[in-house]
Length: 235
Image 1 (cartoon, rainbow, N blue to C red):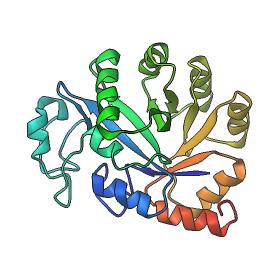
Image 2 (cartoon, rainbow, N blue to C red):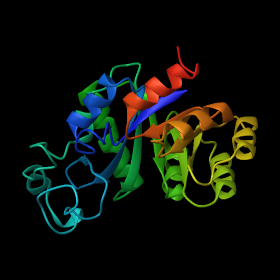
Image 3 (cartoon, helix red, strand yellow):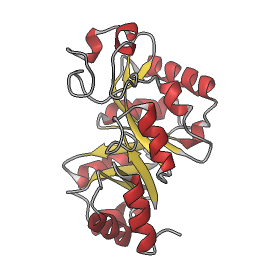
């Protein structure tokens, strides 16, 4: 079962920063999950629409230039990272889940993704592209069938599963409070991997492992690694 650091090891380091991603791998994560916004110049890694919660800035992300955003403190003197910088943290065995929060157009986003892959020398086979906006994923599937896609769903497991099947996705990503064994079974029968977010309690980790899910997103990779190893789900 994969352990993916949700915005990195975000309990112990500022979320969506290089320090959080490096710490996630140090704590035993198999991969990382992070959020992205497309700007005119590049793709940045950031979660919220506004800057206040996680930086010393104010206002909306998209009202700022890349240069302005890079001057902000994202916690512990960390910058808001660029996509290529985050991909550069990952070796060729790591799984990198890029969640698209915003894009200008699918074509421009894909061009910037390819540039980030080139700069980081990341293997695109290790990428998993996800979003709650399934229309974007469907467009990506049409243009780049080589990329693995993950359909995110927050409220309806059934809707998310149907959408994932329709776009020939690699995986479906269920919220912890909507997933159950029936949907895990149906997803596997359809050839889909099942990932669940956000899983921080050991009891939930063990329950999902027993259910047969393929991976979890967690803010505490070290606890997940220890819990699942002690329970016999990881070696």
